[in-house]
Image (cartoon, rainbow over all chains, first blue to last red; front, side, top):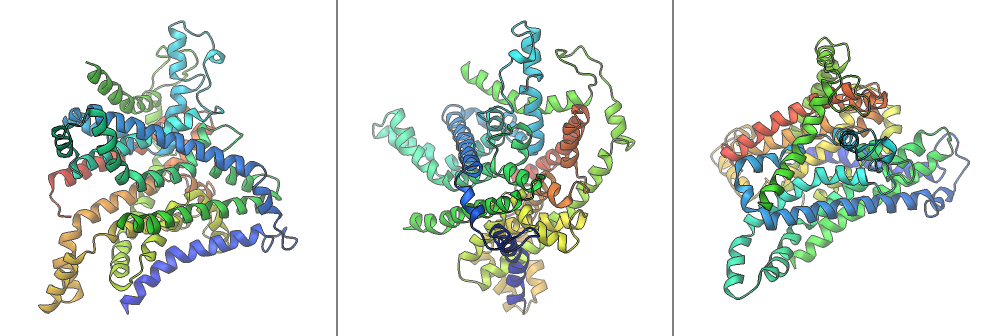
Length: 279
Length: 256
C-alpha cells in the first residue's frame, strides 16, 4: 500500500499543482479562461515575440550570463592563485558568510552602498571628488544592470569558489599537476588543458542551474533594476498587477513560456546531458 | 604581499554588508552627504523589542512558517524519496522533482494563484506555507534521492531478515545513517523558506508579514533604518545555523 501511496503523494503535492497551474495559465493565455475572455486567440502568444517579452528575456539572459561568468571567473582566479591561503580556517569560514544573507537584504545593502546617495557616494563627497549625488555614476537602477550583477556575483562567487575547492580536492588536481609537471607541461598548459576542463565538467550542471535561477530572479531586480527593460519575473508580475486587465493574458503566456524554457533546460541537463556524459 | 591584499579585499567585501546593516540599524537622520556625523540611536532596536515596529511579530511568524515548512518538507521528502528510489525505475521521477524547484518561485505563485484563491488560501499563513512546500518538498526529495543506495537497502534487508519491522528498520538502520543528511536538509529547507520573498508576497497578498516582506516594506517607505534592523534580524538565524551546520559537518559526528 505504502509503495503506491508515497509516489502518489509526490504526484499530488508536486506535479499536479504544477500541471494544473501550467494548464490554467495556458488556457488563460489563449482566451480559454478568465472573465474578460472573448474566445480562442493566439494574439497573446504572437505578442511575445515582438516586444517587451523578447527584450526582457534577452536582458534576463544577459544579466544571468554576465553574473555567472563574472562569479565563475573570479572563483577560478582565486582558486588558481589563492588556493593555499584558503587552508587558513579564518579565511575559509568567511567564504560562508555571504550565503547567510537573503537576496532581498543583499539588494538592500548594494543599494545603500552604490546608489547616488549611498555610502560610496558619501565617501567620494567627503574626499572632495564629487559635490552632489548627480555626479556619482549610476550603479544601481542603471541600464546595464550593474547593481543586479554585483548582487548576483556577491551571492554566487563564494558558492562557486567552495564548489571548485571541493572539486579540486575530490578530483585530486594537485596530484595531477605534479604528474603534468614531471611530464614537462608548463603552468598554463596545466591550468587550461588539464585542470580547467575537469573543473568545468564538474561545475557545468550547477552553472546552468545558477543561470536559470539568475534569469528568474525577482527580489534583487525589484530593488536594483530599472523600469525598462525589466527582468522576466518582474515584468510578469508588473503585467499581472497593472491596471490594464488586457495585460493579464499576456502575463500568463509569458509565465508559461518561461516555465517551459526552465523545464526543457533542466530535462536536457539531467536526462540528455548526463546520458552523453555517461557514454 | 599581493595575495595578502587580495585576501583582505575578499574578506572585507564579505564583511562590509554586515557592517552596513548594523550601522544603519543604529542610525537616524542619515542625510546626504553625512557619513558619520549624524545621530546614533538604539531606538530602532527598542522598537523591535517592545513590538512597536512590527518586526518582532514578523520574526515570530517567519520562524513559525520556516520551522513548520522545513519539518514537513524534510520528514515527508525523506520517505517519498525512498519510495521513489525503491519502487520506480525511470529517472524521469527525479527530473520531474526539479521542475517546481527551478521555475522562479514568484512565477510559480503567479500561475498557482487562481487555485489558491479558489481554495481560500490566498492571504493566509497556511496558504504561504503550502506554497513554500511546493518548492521545499521537491528540494528535499532531490537531496535525499542519492541517499538510498545499495548499502542502505542491504542494511534494511538485514534488519528485515532478522525479523525487524519497518519501524525497526527506520530506528536501527535508516535513521543512524541519515541523521546528518536530515539535519542538513532541515537547515536548507529552513533557509529556502526564511529567504523567500516573491512567492510569500504574492500568495500572502501582503497580509502575511514575514521578515523579508517587512524589509521590502521599509525600503518602499524610505525607512532604511528599520529595513536594516529587519535585515539584521533576518541574518541572525542563518549565521547560527551556519555555525551549527559547520560543527556537525566538520566534526564528522554524523555519518553520510
